[in-house]
Image 1 (tube, one colour):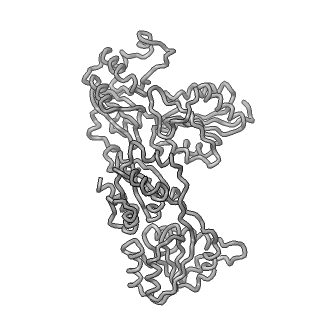
Image 2 (tube, rainbow, N blue to C red; image 1 turned 30 degrees about the vertical axis):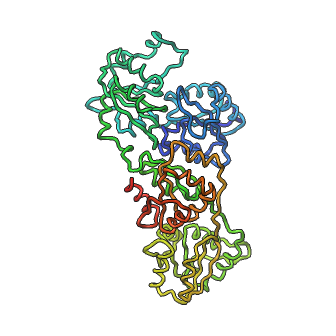
Image 3 (cartoon, rainbow, N blue to C red; image 1 turned 90 degrees about the vertical axis):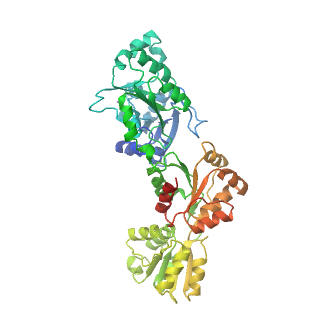
Length: 525
């Protein structure tokens, strides 16, 4: 064993849903210096890697498999080349992850790679993954076994290596006579040879009326399940235009789907939804949509940046005892204020929570309140209507007249609240805590988001996200992009921005919160 070599981890990525990777698989991804990943390994998993890790796409699409969006120009590496690259990088002392769809040792050629690595004297580990054979039927509501009707199950690859034989010789390699007697049979990669394989089962004694199903893109929002019989499934699959990657299940267990399907019953299942929120903060909204079956496309139209100078904010923090009220209109304002409050530049007077004890704190909505509470600060005022107009009404009832108010916010914030507080004889100091800027988005990336299959919804969570979207694509192109797409916005202010740009809003929740918007989408659909 070469002690100077690195290590290679053969990691199962699971069947598609990124949450189905194992804990060890996730941990190992975080250790990698370089990741070689397959066509069927969900790219969301690459976010678990450290920023410096190199990610190399190696393809391995399989026979007849369609190319993922965004991968059309990426080349697949031959198997022998993959093995050479893995070994070469490990010999440099790097930690290498070979990320493979499903489980490395279930029709994934992981055995071949492990043998090549072993012959090279490189240290390696196998990290099993959840195989599509069990996960995909489970997401389709099909148990592979059942105590009363199915006590055995067989996994079969949908196509053989040509070198292993053809025609009569293949019949000896694949025990069709035994498979025909099995209560449940699962075919991997079975679209191209679906008709042939089912005819073989019938020829060797399987009843043509045996229930069968084909499941494409299993465990993902694009999942599609077609049920039929062994005799009719191939015709049904062609009629329904089923594409790879697909899994075929043959057996009476398929009939349980009518009562056990759960994934495809989710309220947002199959709906493609664009999220335009700042990328670092999109996860909460995106996760809620995914939990309800939605397919999320993140298109950040806002980037949050520090102010060009922190001097005004630092100056306000230094004289914090002069204020009566501290108002926050966003989570971002809390984060930037707290970071400066906690750690002022060299030479500044350090402060802690005791310096805020005299203040009353007001926020625009529950998310901002939760962020403050996580810092140990309780909120004194939160309006019933989660926008500036609601804050104005709440302050009129709170007796804020004549008070001195500090508002850390974005440079581009609305002036309505400030103007109303001035009308109440308040002394208001607005200080820039951060900036909303437009991110750089390449034209081809925009085209990719809106090309077929066309998204069903686009969501806007702020006026800035609307304004920046129109600025990014241009007014004319925005209309073309949004044709046939429904629009959802979080509240009246955002709706008004949409209308100012000629964008028709189809949905707005009763309350201006992300959970309320998700609930409204589910009810609408």
